[in-house]
Image 1 (tube, rainbow, N blue to C red):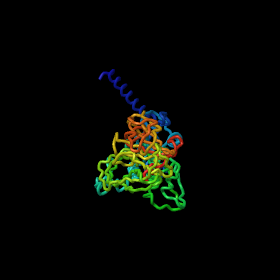
Image 2 (image 1 turned 135 degrees about the horizontal axis):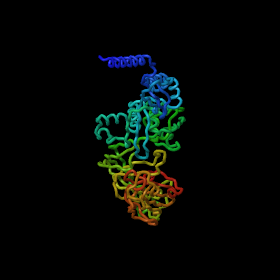
Image 3 (image 1 turned 180 degrees about the horizontal axis):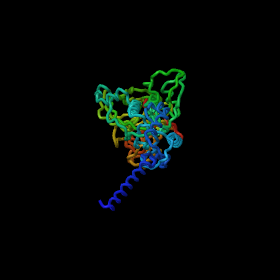
Image 4 (image 1 turned 120 degrees about the horizontal axis):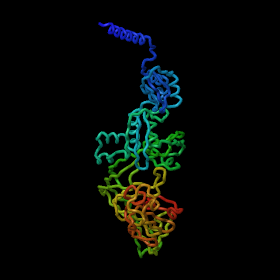
Length: 507
């Protein structure tokens, strides 16, 4: 090897040895480090070398949350991000300082579920949080039990319902009108999280912001009297929903016990079809015949009235315990024919508008006629209904366009035929009655016929006779189906008059 080449080799060896010695003497702090940047709300709040230590510290410090919700783990806030990074000579943050900063600015989370409920009926979409799915399942069952007997519901779910002939009632097409979806999520511990089904079902039945209203039972109180005297009034079913330990209106109350008289305001809409077989009494009409051989003060019931009796099979839709106004009667077996009451009177001039006493509706002997054809079914009585008083009687079963009859002689004093024939629940058209007729029967007694079709054949000022057609059954105004709203008022309706139970006309 030439001298020149030897010199080059020696120089290269010296360079390599120098680089080696430089490398082994360089401080280790200049090596590339694997670290984590901690972000809160998009801002860096520190640098750590072990993210598991941070998570473990969060989990350790939140024992009170674990105890409250009976969970094993607590997790960082939703806005916390721990991002892996590489750095020379990083300045690491104190992990306790990081924790304190997180705790002061953000909420920690636990694993649970978000339940989303779509809009339906009168309700907007809403959501809430639960700790586990079984809480929702149990709450849904208890919600259903408020409206359907538990045994009946279980038979429906198991497909073991008895035939209608045996059970007298069964159910079909049971569903919620809302879509209910559930997804797993980390939930802030400061959000409302349901950890038991009892609290959740109370909110689903009475509303999420309800305040419970209680009443202390006094001597002489009954479930009916407490319900009717409440403000706003309750019906018995609403009382039983609010107080599930009582099973019927005849359940015994204990003086001094506290009962719940909160009006229910369900957040869900449970819809189902009721198939029912029941005995239905048919009111008899009251007729008067004149006997020229009797003195004018002669008055005698010569043929006593007998109510008719039928076995009806029907079906109707129910939402949260409230039946639709419309019913389908698909079988009607007459057990006993009705016999109209006949009153014989001596000669007396018949007035156009009979003068009758408000306390005794058959004082004139003229009687009153049922306002619809047959067979019919009363879907809603004169009674409290969801915080308001239903000031009439809903009658269905005779079908769209069937005749509506004047219940007595009188003069038509108000007519509305301006509403669409197809209404909807909540419509204000025709003071919610849709197309209607009001008749004055004299002595301040009025009858009201609502939700009819617009082809009303009478006008204001017309004199009508008992049994005359004054309209046709429809579903106009605020209505959930084809029916007649039949009302009785002492005084002009909606203008100072007082509504009474229309059944008083037929007793």
